[in-house]
Structure formats: C-alpha cells, structure tokens
Length: 353
Ligand code: GLY
Image 1 (cartoon, rainbow, N blue to C red):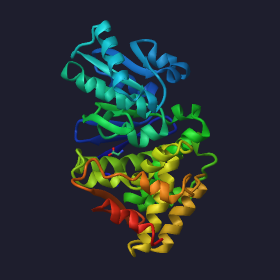
Image 2: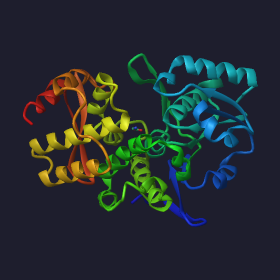
Image 3: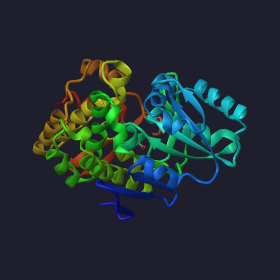
Image 4: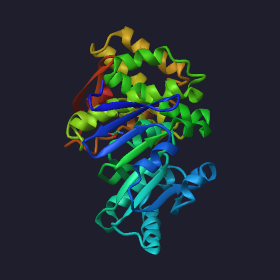
C-alpha cells in the first residue's frame, strides 16, 4: 500500500489523507470539515457548473464564482476564454486562490485556467463525481479538448488539495456512479490485488450509500494512482500504466455515443485482458475474474460497435514517437506492464482472439 499516506479517524467514517510529491494533498473525508482547514488565507474564487450549483449552492455561494456549461462539450478553449474574462472582471490575480467544485470536466478545465491565468494562480479541488475522485482530479493533469482530440492542450500542475467527500456522490445517478467504478477496478488490476479481492466481496447495489466501504475502496484506488504519479509525474514511463483499457475505451468513445467513459473503460479492460490471455501473458482464470467483477458491477462487456469499426478508430498515441502505441497488458491481477508496439501489430492481436 501507499507508504506516504496516513489515516485520520473522524466521526463514524475513516478519513484518509494522501500526499503526492509533497505538493498535493488528497483527502477522502467530509468537505464541511476539510475545506475550512485546507483553504489558504487568500481571496477565494470558485469555478463550478450549473448542476453543482443546483445541488451544492452553499459551497459556491459565499465566493465570487464562474459557472461553466455541462459535459465534455464544455471542455474547450472557448470555456477557458469565458473563465479568463470573468477572472479579469473579478480582479483575480496571483494573490487569489481558485477553487474548482465539480466533476472531472470542471476540475480539468479549472486546473488549466488557473495554471495559465497570469502565468499561474494556486488552485484546489472539491471533487464531486466518483470518476473525478478516483482519477481525473488527482495527479495534476489538466487541460481541454481540441475538436475530437482529447486533452490536447494542458499542463501538468498539481492542485494544492483535492477533497473527495463520498457524501457528495449520493446525488449522482446510478449510471454516473458506476462510471467511476470502472476506474476503481482498473486501479486494482494495475497494482492492488487486495483491492481487487475487496471489490469481489463488495455489494455494489448498496455501495453508493455505504460511506465506510466506499471511502476505503476510494482511498486504495487513489493510492494506486498517487504512488504511480509519485514515481512518474509527467508520464515518461510508469504513469502510462494508468491507461490500462483506455486505448480501446477512447476508440469506443470516438465511434459510438452509447457508452460513457467508465462503460467504455470496462469494455476496454475486458478486451485487453482477453488479448493478454491469447498472447500468453495472463491466465484465463484471471481474465475470467476481471470479466466477472466488471459484470457484477453492472457493466456490459460487449463493444457497442463491431470490432472492425472499433479498431479503425484506434489511432497512434499522441505521446509515442512514430506509428507506435503504448499498450498496457495485465500480467496478473495487481500487476501490469507497458509495451510499445506499432498500431497495426496491436490491431492484428484482435484477429487472433
Ligand atoms: N487519467 C490518467 C492519468 O492521470 O495519468
């Protein structure tokens, strides 16, 4: 487990406190308790969205704020322009602190806006979706999309803190909640066999309201990411492990609107585990356990489009040189390895399955 983490007991539910690079504190605990402790003594400006404002107005209302639009369609240069202009109107400068309250879109865009406004204003997050808490808001990647190119413009810059309060997840729809479960399962397959076993013992039908269990699972999954980011903040090596299942997931998201990110990641995990079996890298038994867990968590493992269409959407990796792609293969539950290969070689693997 993550050796730079400590735990703090508060009220009935355990609080968890994880430190990344000595620069970013990720807390699993009550926002009411932690926000006043973590906010610096500076003027606070909030960025959020209309949905969060509806559910958690009291978190936003005390501060000057900017509300952005909903969904991936808002992760654009245009939204940045709106934020910068509002910051200028509000007289934001480097002595201020920018607080994002929202899911992965809000935290990605705000992290980039704060990192670039006046060459950098300090920022922190209250992460309000399971997907954001377990992945997007943690680790210092931020940015926006350019047309169909995801996260094409952005920075690596750690938020001063990320607060992950599981009580905020109660207003998510079942589907929104489940999308985050895929990233928890992904983290377990990458590096935490014990977490995988805990997930196998978890009752997913009650998890959204089981604060104790959810906090523990979340803490372990965040710890997997934290320890990887600790070793490789700017994705020159091990951080690629976090892309397990994502090459195919991104292809699914590009070729169909039927699945959200987590649903596509679940299919990506299923497909890559089965290719790993065909390549002799993973035991059939481990692949079966991964499939069963994904299915028990409520995911459909069948791709929403034909494999041929899906593979057409697999593009070279923007982070790899030449016509190559970095693929993460599970070797056993809790251990994965990255392999760089030509795109065509990757596609050919699926003909053998
Ligand atoms: N979402 C993958 C990463 O943060 O590296």
